[in-house]
Structures are given as structure tokens and as C-alpha cells.
Image (tube, rainbow over all chains, first blue to last red; front, side, top):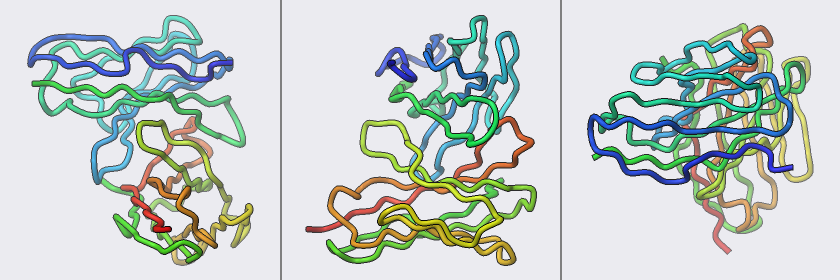
Length: 113
Length: 113
């Protein structure tokens, strides 16, 4: 049982390049989330999904797109990377309902130059 | 808009001492208050959580104190150990919000031996 995995672990992009971050969970969780973590700002929700084929915007969605074609996978896309998107990205998932424990992946460190 | 405010940003404690981290929230719809612990290079992991129908919850050396009227809650770590050195995040959630968490800014705890 791997839990939540993220690919890749590190990436360096040039401004304007695009990339996709992959999140996979093997716990059959309904809900999945993408966060970014920046120093002094905690974790901020980018997008989330409450089921296969559904996505919704979080607190900081601009510049990102997501897709959830399969229940176990949640993809985060950057179409045209900007230096402001330099951050650590975390994916998380939970089973719907109490106790709402979010299981986090190990993170992806992205640098945009 | 930061709906959960966490303090202090950093905390240094001697081994055996008590670590106290405070959070305040604004949204009265929040009804679930977890604390997450994050070690360097790892994703956050649930440490302890409380619902507002109780004023205190204790799990081992970790205690959450909750003051509903003041809209504040805090984490107390008794007999702090060097292995507790990590970043701690408070968070809050409404049960009607599909598990979405609003995080505080984080506190970097260092416990000196």
C-alpha cells in the first residue's frame, strides 16, 4: 500500500514551458487535492476533486489546470510556467466523510527560472 | 484572505520543556480543527484533531485546547523532544466543504537537546 505518490520529485522549468505533475493514490479515496507550499504562507489549495471526472477551483487556481480521468489519479498542469509558480506542490486525498484525515504525498519541488 | 492565523512563526524549546502553538480563526462555520506535523522533505501528516463539542483533546504528549467563544485553539507539546523538531500547521474545515482545509502559516519548532 503506497498511499499517495507524486511524480516527479524535482523539476526545473524555464519561463513559458509547460509540465504536468502526477498524483496517484491507492486507497480508493473519493476526494483529492493539490496544494502549494510557500515559506510563511502555509499550504494553499489550488484545485480539488470530489470524484472521477469532477474538478473545482481552490484558493489560488490561476495558472493551473487539473484533470481527474481516473479515480486514483489527479493531474496538475502548468500551461505556461512563471517564476511565481516556484514552490513545493503537495497532493492529498481523503475518504469522504468523518474523520476527514488528509493523506499527503511527498511533494514536488518546482523551480521556474 | 487568511482565515486561520497561526503564531509564533518559529519556536525554540529546550528538551523536556512545553511547546505551545496558537491559532485563531474567523469563519464560524468551521467545525473540525486538525494539527499537521511536517518533517523536512516530507508531506504533512495528521497529528491530532478536535471538534468544537469538546474543549480539550489529549493524545500522549500532545494536547489540543479549544476555546469556541474566542475562536482560538492551541497545540501543547509536553516534555518536548528533539524528535519533535518539525513544522506544525493548524488547520480548519467546515463539514460541508468537501474536506477542504484552510491552513495556518506554520510554526517551525526546534527542540534543543
